[in-house]
Length: 221
Image (cartoon, rainbow, N blue to C red):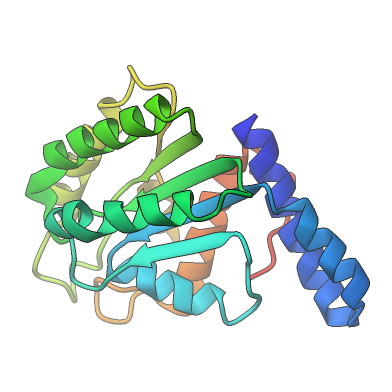
């Protein structure tokens, strides 16, 4: 059900971009209504901030929400990220299907196990409330080691292995390995943060993956 809802949402976004360029307000409003029952929330650090700034240059997306802050990690997730996430969901009663996309960890790779425990507890809470929510834990994406010296790709790979193998007992938590893909297109501004082109590619890769239609939809950003 979630994948069907998200695919409908993504397909609508693509059509919205085309319709917006034609200036047909009535069609635009109808298409927005079609996507109104499902939503995506991105939770992350400065990389998620950068992705939002990049993709929102193209088209506003009514049912996408970003909860992100530069330089943050696990402590911020607990104190600020999750409370804001819960507020976002509870304040949009018209939305029945939620997808949470988390992309944290590059600032505190050593806290991988804490992230895992907290994600599980969050989803337990959502389930107990009867909410239709799926979480996608996105891999920590690579750095350019010639420019960034604060972490290594080997350390990132070790953290990703924990994320990849820790959710087998949770059908509503899934892992996205974008790290392998990003390594093939890597372009950064400072070794840690990405160029606009790389951010767009990551965004598209994530949405295509969660929709389950990786080869069947062209997302315009």
